[in-house]
Length: 191
Image 1: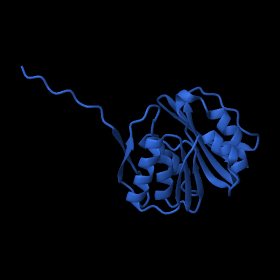
Image 2: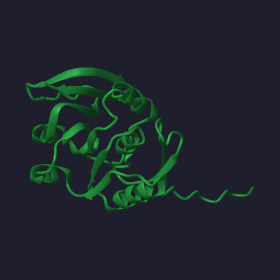
Image 3: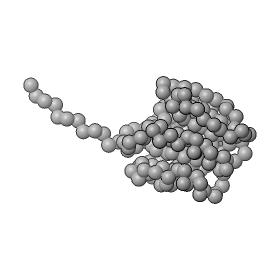
Image 4: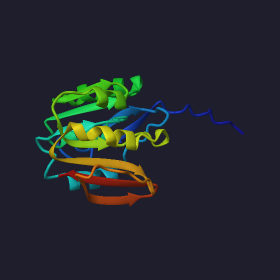
């Protein structure tokens, strides 16, 4: 009996843009430890929630990873998206995907997200995506720093494991919440 050759582990995954000008486009992302792109159904639900506020928005994707949230926001008409990612390989692929799409208004910053948030002094953001690596437990530290970077009436998306307790600022109101499998995702509105 012939043995089948061992299959090499894939070095890239694939991400599909759900809506907007790049709808249906499939983009590569590197297989990196801890990188867990937001699934299609979750992204579709999130952007249905955001449909009235994403166009013309300034967005921040704090732990960009594969870039699914930031790229989806750009595809749907946000004017600017800053994507913060620590991993060199992921940043290179984000840059390549932005070039492939000929995206305007995007900025990829290779940095530790918490250090970047602590030092950022630029304009505020209308929509913030917060989906840190689950094993790193960076939710609270991130939430504590995001507030100073929000424009009035900003929306903050947080993706966390089911049962993860979060302490949000008093001026944040939970707008929507849903769980899918092991993930709970919430959209807050900054009053």
